[in-house]
Image (cartoon, rainbow, N blue to C red; front, side, top):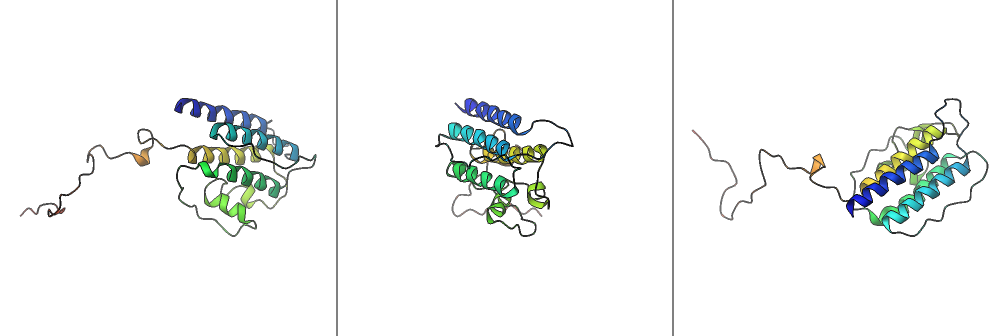
Length: 182
């Protein structure tokens, strides 16, 4: 069952990445609203099927270029969809400066959006497919991380030091201080 969830996440991330990550050309046109809405809808369907949730209601697509606020609003909808399934609370990340939107501040604080990235710091309005694909990939990776219980076998920050062994409890009345040698 656990392998099926992991494989489903990988397939979902690859499919969404393909939708958002078209060509790798530097002089590409900015990402459109239709492309953003299509990739967010696909990510929402993947989240809903993997986490056993209802499909999210996303906004209607237009033919114009996607704005920063539209991308952040889509990320926020996916965040609120997946939030009940989070297995643990991440350590907050320091937010540089003061982003204009509260939702962006929360997404940065919990690692869903890069604190130093185009969505956060760029002064321009339009974003390329590469920049949007990177932001979406980071968002989905963080969502996958928070919605699955980590294994102590494969997570270094949960492993015990093999030399010290398991932590032993000190019996009542005994000192936990090491003996003094003279």
